[in-house]
Length: 161
Image (tube, rainbow, N blue to C red; front, side):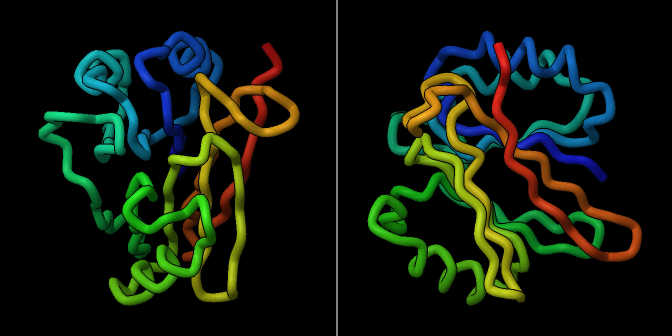
């Protein structure tokens, strides 16, 4: 199963729509928050399941703040990250994901892509596909692949346009 992971679109979905046109083998889409009311529109253009959580800018949203997804034998913790102070470090979100017995944690909030692992937990922030803050200034997204052998890989990608 190949999962597109995005975050922090902030009502600027153009890059998301363009990316969907270029990726033909995606099975699932996960949005890690700050969709700002565009979740229904974004879901409507996906031919695959679309899941989103609320971020700190999703005021009055009915989206859940967190989700635990069980996909292909993996437990995936999805949150925006602001409630775990991810701008100051990852230890809180790591502890929460482990407390929930997850092996993958996905989050956003910082607009900067990051990936790390401690052997039992993979942690990925796809950055922002709309408003990046890392030095390259390029929009980023993640690909999470859940393989038939039970393994999982996380990859970060920059958009070239």
